[in-house]
Image 1 (cartoon, rainbow, N blue to C red):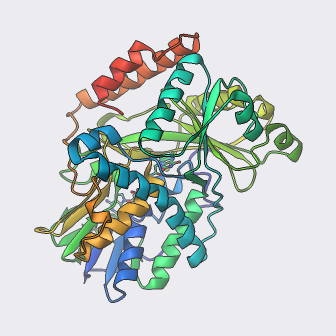
Image 2: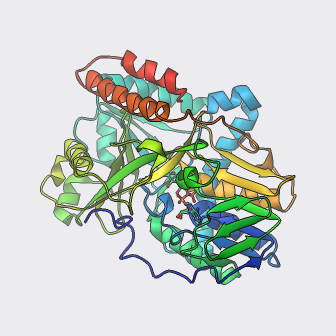
Image 3: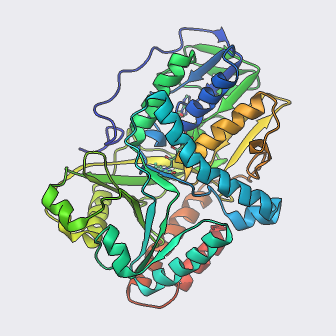
Amino acid sequence: MNGRVSHWFDGLPQSRPPLPGDRDADVCIVGAGYTGLWTAYYLKRADPSLRIAILEARFAGFGASGRNGGWLSGLVPGDRNRMAALYGRDSVLAWQRTLNDAVDEVIDVTEREGIDAGIVKGGTLHVARNPAQAARLAAEIEEERRWHVDVVPLMKDEAGERIRLSGVVSAYHNPHCARVQPAQLARGLADVVGRLGVDLYEQSPVTDLQPGRATTPLGTVRAPIVLRATEGFTAALPGLRRQWLPMNSSMIATEPIADDIWDSIGWHGRETLGDTAHGFFYAQRTVDNRIAIGGRSVPYRYASRTDIDGRVPERTIKHLTATLHAVLPQVRDVPIAHGWCGVLAVPRDWEASVVLDRATGLGWAGGYVGHGVTAANLAGRTLADLVCGRRTPLTELPWVGHRSRNWEPEPLRWLGVRGLYLAYKLADRHEARGRASTSPIAKLADRIARKP
Ligand SMILES: Cc1cc2nc3c(=O)[nH]c(=O)nc-3n(C[C@H](O)[C@H](O)[C@H](O)COP(=O)(O)OP(=O)(O)OC[C@H]3O[C@@H](n4cnc5c(N)ncnc54)[C@H](O)[C@@H]3O)c2cc1C
C-alpha cells in the first residue's frame, strides 16, 4: 500500500458534513489537526457558550496529525539557545518544563475523555551508530541537562537491554515521551469536540482568510476571532506562500511481527526510537506489533507543493527499508505493508510560534519543525487563554508572539533546501566511514540553515 493518507487510518474515514452555507461564529478555526482540535477543546471547556466553527479541507487528521511517527514528546519545537538569547533563559526553561508536562496532560485528557490512542509512556531511546554520532549524542546529553531534562546515558549493553539494535555505539534515554497511534488521537479528539458542541465541517477548504471571516466555496464563516491551524499546508493560502516551508517526512510500516522475532528484539517498554544521524530516523513499535519507521528522503517539493494523499516515491520506501534492516536485521524477512508521507511546517528561523493579534482577531499556531504532537496541545491551551483574554503562565512562554521572517522566493528556496539535505546526506556518508567528530559539511550546512 502506498499513500492513502497513512497507515494509521483503517480505511479512509467517513466525512462529516461540509459547511452548509454562510454563518456566524464567535471563533472560526481553520484546520482540524491537533492544533485546531486542541484549541477548540480548551476553548469550549473554558467557555461552553462559545460558538466555535472548525473548517477542514478534507477530514480531521488528514494532515501531519494523522500521519506522524507518534512521538508524544517533550521536545521543544525550536532552538532553545536562540530563544533564550531573545527572551531569556528562565522563560525557555519554563517552556521546556511545560512541554514535558504537556505529555502527561495529553495522556490525562485521553483517559478522561475515553480516547483510545494506544498511548504508552516508555520514553525515547536515542542511539548513536558511529563515533561522530556518539560525539554528538554525548554533547546532546550535556545540552539536555543544561535545560534540566533528566536524560539517562546508556552504554551499548544497557541500550540493548531495551532494544537489541545492530551497530549501536552509545545511547541515552529521555523519559519525556509516549508512543501514540496518531490518527486515533486526532479522530478521538474530533469526536470529543463534536460532543462538546463544536461545529466541525469537513470537506470545507478555506480559500481566503481575512480579519473577521474565512471563505470557502460553500459559504463564509464570519467571526471576530479567526485562527489558522494549517501547519504544512499554510503556503497554499493567499499571501502566505513564503511564511512556512512545507517539509516532507516519510514513513513505512511493516506487517505485524511474530512473537519469536519480538523475543529477539525486546522493545518491551514501547520506547520511541531515533538516531543521531543528520538524516535521522524515528520509529515506534505500534499498538498492533509492527514497526513504523520514518525519515526525510525527498525533503521539499518545488514551490511548496504538497503530496497527493501521502503517496511516496518507491525509492523512499527502499531507503527507509534499508535503514530498518540496518538497525534491526531481525526483521529482514518481514514484509513492508505500507509507505506514506506528509508535511510539517518549518519557519525560516526554525522556531514555532503562537500568535493572536488582538487588533485584527487573526491568530495562528504552528511551525513546529517536526515536534508538533505535544506542542500542538500546549499551543491549543495557549490560544484558548489568549482568545479568552487571560494572562497565564502559558501566555508568557517565549514562543507566544514570536515572529519569523519569510523564506526566500523560488528558485532560491528549492535550491537552498535541496542543497542542505544533499549536504547532510554527504555528511552522514562521511561520518559512517568512522570519523570521530561531526563532518564539517554538516556544520557548514547547519550554519547556513541557521538550524539548531
Ligand atoms: C511523517 C511525519 C512524522 C512526524 N512525526 C512526528 C512525531 O513523531 N512527533 C512529533 O511531535 N511530530 C511529528 N510530526 C509533526 C506533527 O505531526 C505535526 O507537527 C502536527 O501534527 C501538526 O498538527 P497541526 O494540527 O498543526 O497540523 P496538521 O495535522 O497538518 O493539520 C492541518 C489541517 O489543516 C487542514 N487544512 C489545510 N489547509 C486548509 C484550508 N485551506 N482550509 C481548511 N483546512 C485546511 C489540513 O487538511 C489538515 O487537516 C511528524 C510529521 C510528519 C509529516
